Length: 110
Image 1 (tube, helix red, strand yellow):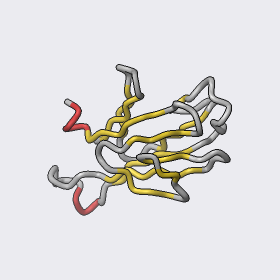
Image 2 (cartoon, rainbow, N blue to C red; image 1 turned 180 degrees about the vertical axis):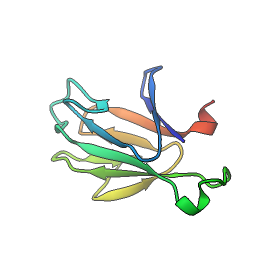
Image 3 (cartoon, rainbow, N blue to C red; image 1 turned 180 degrees about the horizontal axis):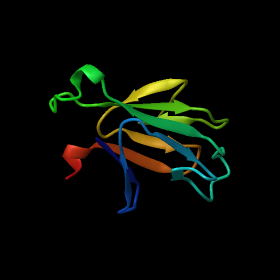
Image 4 (cartoon, rainbow, N blue to C red; image 1 turned 30 degrees about the vertical axis):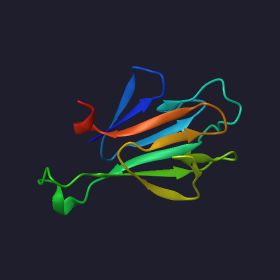
């Protein structure tokens, strides 16, 4: 499992397999407000786990980020195109302003 932590916030979001987590400015799981550079459906994070390894706790699920926005999404300061595989500790910026998040492996967070 993965955990998405908002920069400067004690709140976070547990990311589980099979759910689409939409980041955007309206009616989204990851709601980013007060930022004109955020699209309604800005980006999507999904968690996938190979069915062949479902019973193996040593195999970590993978997190993917897909950008649909006009102003872009960056991972670790690099603007992405299409879909990218996220890694533990990656810093995600939605849009152009200060909408930073960090993705953490759930086991590393606790």
